[in-house]
Image (cartoon, rainbow, N blue to C red; front, side, top):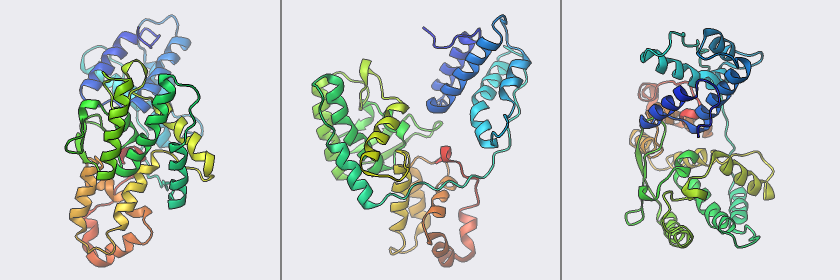
Length: 323
């Protein structure tokens, strides 16, 4: 049964199937905002049986104190939905105007070694309260899931949607098919992480022998975004006080790699390309963002490359969703 409740439900279902088939579906953002728009139409226009301009304009109008980027994130899926309908002759409604995307300075948490040691200690010592499948699954999965984020720079969504068939435990390679857009890429696991993944696969298979996802949830599904947020916060704040998110383990991975370049020569164009591909960035420009959060590295790179840095790595507008 569909989760959408307005008269738009059948069209929304078609739109979602199309976007998923095209690998252009952002579950954590698009689905939430599309449901909010659907609910808005259902509650504010209960007697309508077709889309009207007022519905779109009233929902998509930038709200008081709403920043441009926040408004863009909220209405972009509606903009894409209307375009989808127009191209198929299903509506004559105009797409909403998207606010100009603004530069955003985002400084992720700089994890210390001590913080990470404490965090993973909590992951490894989750108490067993009962012996149900769910309890055992969480205790087994949490330490491996977050270590994978830490050791590979993989996105939280990519880890959640990782299918068992996408994990080659013989070669130690992950096939990241469910990434941003159509940017499929591969990640080679560190030997220590590969050993952990092999052990986990062996143990979790005893509970879920026919699982589809490498990290299985109930009903042969994958974990939700809220599962990641809830477990990270619960374990992080048991022994740490600074604000941090699970996604910032990805930033930590990038910064840790970039910091190693300082004393290893400056073949940075090759190194940057390797890092960019490994992290699944569509362009090298997205990877440039990390220079701004590594203290002193941008100045060192500029000194060694003189005027060529901006040519090789042009200025970009940063957005965490692109990283």
